[in-house]
Amino acid sequence: MAAGTVLAAALVVGVVCAVTGGSGERDTVQRFAAAWSRGDWAAMRRQTTGSAQSHWPLKAFAARYTDAAAIATARGVTTGRPTDDGHGDWRLPVVVDTRVFGTVRNEVRLTVVQDSGKARIDWHPNLAFPGLAVGERLRRTTTLPDRADLLARDGTPLAQGPARTSTLGAAATAIVGALGPIPADRRLRAEQLGYPADAQVGITGLERAFDERLAGQPGGQLRAGVRLLAERSPRKAAAVRTTIAPSVQEAAVTALAGRLGGIVAIRPRTGEILAAAGIGFSGLQPPGSTFKIITVTGALQAGIVKPTDTFAYATSATLSGVELQNANRESCGGTLVKAFADSCNSVFAPLGARLGAKRLVQTAEAFGFNRPTGITGAATASIPPPGDIGDDLAVGSSAIGQGRVQATALQMAIVASAIGLRGRRPDVTLDPARWPGDAPTHVATTPAVARKVERLMLGVVRFGTGTAAAISGVSVAGKTGTAELKSTQACVPTPDNPESCAPDQHEDTTDTDAWFSSYAPAGSGHPRIAVGVLLVSAGAGGDTAAPAARQVLQAGLKG
Image 1: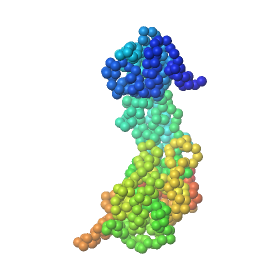
Image 2: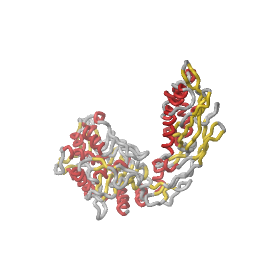
Image 3: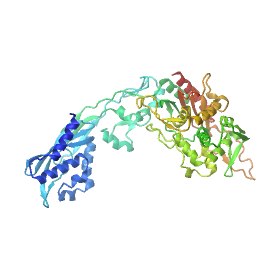
Image 4: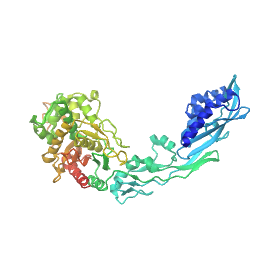
């Protein structure tokens, strides 16, 4: 019989079997013991004397037990069979299962007195933990073992030893993250785990994502005053293997080239994150025209556009009486394929307005917006609720990835993965053991619509704004994005200033974020890699983000 079963059986026996002593005393002690096992502080307190209840309100009474449990890192308490020592004195065996100190076995001594004609426990604070004598307080000292090693998917060390070194150098540093003091919002959890107050914990990157596994088992001493109740040595954890592919990670860091931004690579079928550099998890920015992947998906689903539809060439579109320009006030239009390849705002902003805020938001959420990615420390891409977006101009701006739409490079890699997987959005992970085989997926769109969007994304790389991502002999599907930062593409010409919407003759490339969302190979429904790139204040997506994505795609295809 397992130890837990023996303890549970002992508890039952203690509750239902007769013991020596008056029946009133026995019942009181047994009710107190049973309530303690289930953490029912109010029921425990009801078994104490009136003076104890007057002196110890429920909140203070419960705090004595919860504080002691926190100090001991208790996970559960089991009470055994009480024994009558005579004259109202009872010994109650208590077993406390702790995270740090193992199993603590001791007893509490209960004195039962007659109080207003009823048997009640003369309660004192030392009864909050087994082994405490009157006047003693529970205290602990703990230490952490050396932090476990972090490994890439092939076993290459990413962070090793106290110095957290790696032969991969900067490529490892970019994903490993940093250690630091326990943040305020994690102090309670750290105390429950038994970390010392001055512990260094994972703050960012893989150190944060796998912090508890890397920290190992704390050790230390649990004392009643100066008396030792229990002790255990710290135990280092086994090395933690991640999904990071060294060659892809090195390519991502090289492609980022020290610029402010983020690059994330995913293996779509398994959801494994192969690489992450810069602010790929945390950097929230307007995704610009990469969001048109979502807009056109929604429009195709709703039947308000077909791949064969054509659109008038124009330099801008007017929504809610306001002109929304194409990038650099370029004239574009033609077929849906051509308009998508050229990233034509004058087509997709009105298309978004026709789709409407409700359907636009529903489509974005199906692709993972407003939903946590499941990666610890990663920011959540967002789009406002339909009722908060506003008029047609606001909806149209959102449809081209402006307004209050926010995304990360990770999220746009997930969006690309969903199209490549024929409309199935994969869950993502840094842990290769999180699930066997293929990742769990969720419906983002239908296979038929995903194929249509894939053809549009192929056009972007073959003859549109994303040709810098093309790889010889490989079908690359992608979408560029150039998100406005300090200025806006919407303006209202006036009679006194008819040129207010004229293109800037001195283009400021720091006024835009550059984006690229992509996967390869396209066409099979089984892409091997998807890449999201964000370069902050770096000009046009096709000029800077697309060639960066190309480097990472190539590395992933070789692996």
